[in-house]
Length: 295
Image (cartoon, rainbow, N blue to C red; front, side, top):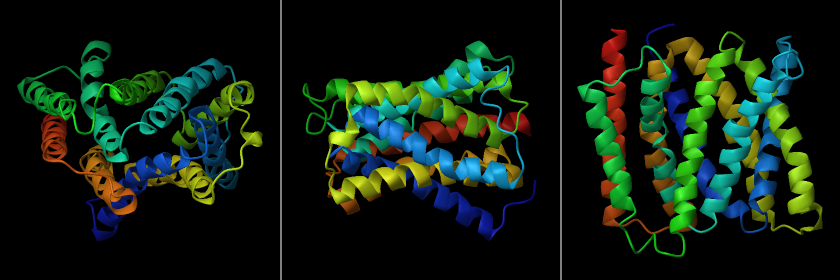
């Protein structure tokens, strides 16, 4: 690892923008595609750059090795379930709300880490951060202008999607000694395999005549936020470490809110801004506690 340079901060910003851009593109994709189709196309197109990189670097993909069941389980929990839940939820709520709701992943992972790992226990600073962050989410749900009885369940499903990411992350510890590219390629392959019969039985996307913007968005979702972004994440992790890379957590909800306004003219209320501030503060205190522990 090295001390961050200007190029490292530039790459971190690009990664944040890419992941934040996923939310408004999911919204556009829902204009033509159902949530199962969006999930399938994301993992299918996302697998392409990862598999090509593994081939180029001569990294063996172990999707069908003796650990295949872990790849299949993680592929379902970390890709299939959240991609479906987010796409289903975003159809009924603004994409900027989805970005804020999904940004709770570091807070949820801290709670789960307390119970399922030996060295990730709560302390005062972490507890304070979790309380602030989730208070912001509770406050967001009180914004009746944006979340009402018609889309309340959809907002909850997006939160459930963020929880799936956390559970998938914990399960990934079971195969943590394997190369990141191998793990990512393997779980993308299994996610594709799982979704092929589901998308064929439930939605039959070949019968759809999609809008051009929806088609572009769903291809973009697969290749860029799902495939290329993961490879960029690996580079940042390798060069600068986990603590530096984790700073994307602050930027994604901010960029997601801005991009939703720019591309979809989504409403930004005072409650959205307060909730966004509370979530970012919560993440800050959780990350601060992690930095102190590593120091």
